[in-house]
Image (tube, rainbow, N blue to C red; front, side, top):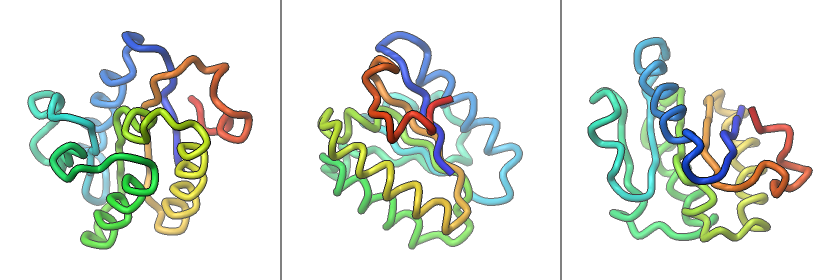
Length: 136
């Protein structure tokens, strides 16, 4: 299952994601993984959450982000909660590729029973119709 926190820069998306991730650390029956661009969340997240910086692994683009998620899932069968900050930015602000990424990620996380929350820096009305169902 995927949920997207959508809004323009400065609307509190990252803070909401951090709050959800820290709450998941306390309540999740499995491991919590947070993927971000840069290393800005290090001090905000509880240390039990696994933080992955896409810049450290030179991840750029939707297919590379999907590969990173698949690799993380494959390496840990106790993975139950996934948080991705700035997902559209990691996908190079390429909305068609981002749309395919979200659709693939939804199938994967549904099959593996992983909860996923991602932030998207965009106006809600600019999100394609096929992705509107993920916005909360």
